[in-house]
Image 1 (cartoon, rainbow, N blue to C red):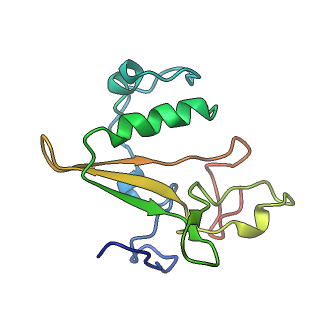
Image 2: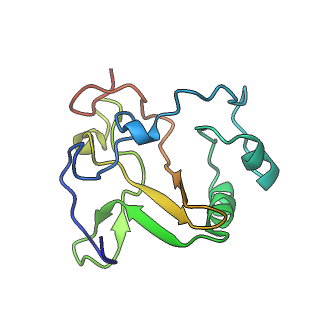
Length: 148
């Protein structure tokens, strides 16, 4: 797609993200996950853990993650929900699995997760993705994005 804001239908064919259902976000062959989450992320930690990993986020380490991913990036794709003015994007995080009855449970749905995809061309074409979720969100959801 061209640069700019594009609306994607919330389904598997549109290019929308779903952390739980998207086959491109699954990591079935990797067994190198660290035993615990790290609170102080350093480049060495990222380089030794090439697999899908949820890091405990503190705000500061999210900035460090972004710095790491921005190094030599060719293009960035941001998935989220536009504000009413269509100038900025929010909900750039997982938007399903919120506890039933919570303030955010009404926003739960599938194929609508936010995230940031980083495209690199050197040394070869590859993609990395940064997706955040809240600790209260479940990684097991039903077909409506509600926790199971």
